[in-house]
Image (cartoon, rainbow, N blue to C red):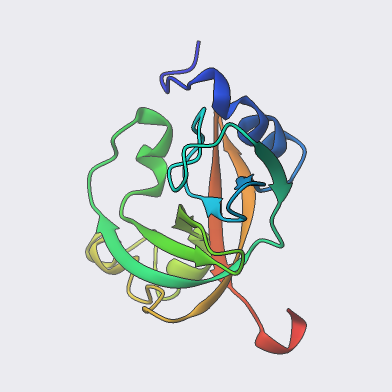
Length: 151
């Protein structure tokens, strides 16, 4: 059983992750996206919500280094970097920086290098692409630097 609870209205988001899609809610009444799955639009209160697929591209708004895993599934990643990303469609998501990007300079033979494993975190304003990733029973999002010319 998953240790992360989810509301029924978030099911389309989670199902999208399972097939490689990032989905978000969009209100047909006021034509605005919203960050989290809700039963009503947080802007106008309408129930006219649909799910749309995101292009998966956005800009980093905030960066945080995590040094203690909140779930045993993420223990192998410690330390890792979480980013808040403002997607092109005008909603925000949190993601983990791609571990292959944040491990540059990391040496498994040098215990001191573990402290600096996330030495190259994403910066605020960086263009990133998000993609779904599974860690054991958990499904989440991973962010990696995106080539602006390839987007």
